[in-house]
Length: 295
Length: 224
Picture 1 (cartoon, rainbow over the protein chains, first blue to last red):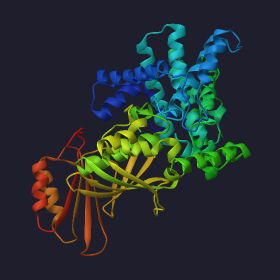
Picture 2: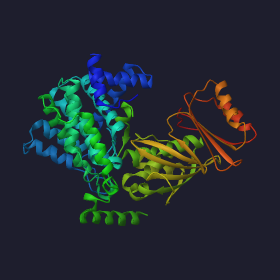
Picture 3: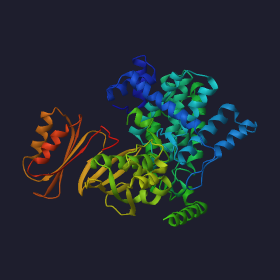
Picture 4: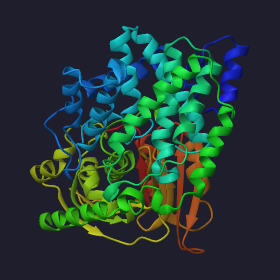
C-alpha cells in the first residue's frame, strides 16, 4: 500500500530505526512482490536514464512550436564566462533544469518525476549534487526512493498533475520531492526530510497551471528551474534546523484545498494566466495557422 | 500510486498524459486486436483535439498502434514509419459524451480483417482507461491480463467463464458486468492476476451465446 501521510513514514522510520528511503523500498517490494535488489536496480536505472537525458541534451533543438529550445546552452555559456552570481552549484542546477525541460518539449527521452512537465527538477539537483560533491551513486538512488515516498503521499492526499491541481501540484510536488531527496544526501533525519518537503511545497502553494497554447513549454521549462532552486534552499533550511510551522501533512492538505478552489482555466487548459495574455493568444493564433497549413 | 509511478515512466516527452498515455492507448489497442493494423480512423476529443498536435499526440497514438512503447525514440518519426509499413491513418475531431478531456476513439482494422472500436482516456502520469469496446461500456486500466467477453444477456454465461478461470487456476482481481438492456448485449470485463491460456479462450469462443472474446495479455508481443 502506498503511504497516506508523511507522518506515517517518519514514525515507521523512527520506530524501526530505518532510514526514510528504506521504508519506501520495503513497502514497494511488498506491494510488487519483488526483491530489494530488483527494486533498487530498477530505481538505479531511472537515475541512469536521467543522466543519459542530461548528457543527451541537443543544443540545436527547438520544440515543434518553436517556443522553447537552446536556452540551456545559454546558461552553460554564461557559467563558462563566469557571468552569473548564483554560485557554481545553483548555476549548474539552473542549467540542468532548463536543459531537461527543453529536451522534454523536443520529444526526447526523459523520466517523468512525478510528471513529464516537471521532469527537470529532480535530475537538476541530484545530478548536480553528484558532480559537485562526488557522492556514491547508491546514495542518489536512495534519494530517489525518498522522493518517491514523498510523491506517493502527495498523490494520495492531493494530486501531482497540473490538470488536477495547478502547477503547485506538478512543479510544487517535484520541488517537495527534490527537497526531501537532498536532505537525505546531506544526512538529515526523516523528520527533516518531511519538513524540507513541506517548506518547498509551501513556497509554491497557489501556483497555477497556465501554459501558453496548452503546451508543456511556456512557462513550464523555466518553472523547472524555480522548482529545483527552491528545493535546494528548502533542504538547506531544514538541514540548518528550520522547521515548517504547519505540519507537513497539513501543508499537503492545504495544497489540495487550494487546487480544488482553482477554476478550470487555471488548470492546464491554456485559457488563463499567461496563456490568456495578448501575446499568449497571438501565439495560439499563429500555431493554429501553421497546423492548418500542414493539414 | 507506487514508487515507480512517481519516479517514471521513462518516456518520450513532452506530456505523460498527451504523449506517453497516448502511446499506451495505441499499444493496448494493438494488443487487443492481436494483429498488425492496416487502417486506423482516429477521433480526437477535448484536449487531445485542442492541443494534441503540439504534444505529439498524433505521433504517439500511431507509434503505439505500430507496437512502440512510451520510451521508444522512434516516436517523433512514427508517421513516416506508418507510411513505410502501410498503416493507413486518418485523424478527425469528435465530441464524445461523458469522457475525460484526454480521450480518443479508435476504429481499427487489422491485416487479417479483425475489427475493433475502442474509446480510451489518458488519465495522467501515463495511466489510461479503456472506456468502451465495440460500443459497449467497459472500464479497463490495462495493468492486468484482462478478459473481455461479449455475450447475450442470459443466465449462465458468467458462471461458465468464472468456472473456466477457476479450472485454469486464474484468480480474478476485479470483475465488472455491463449490458445495454435485459436480454440484449452484455459484456463482462475480468481483470486477472494470471495469464489465461489461449486454448481456454478458444473454448469460450465456441460456447453458444458468447458473441466475442477479446483478451488483453500482459505478455507483450512485438510481432503477431
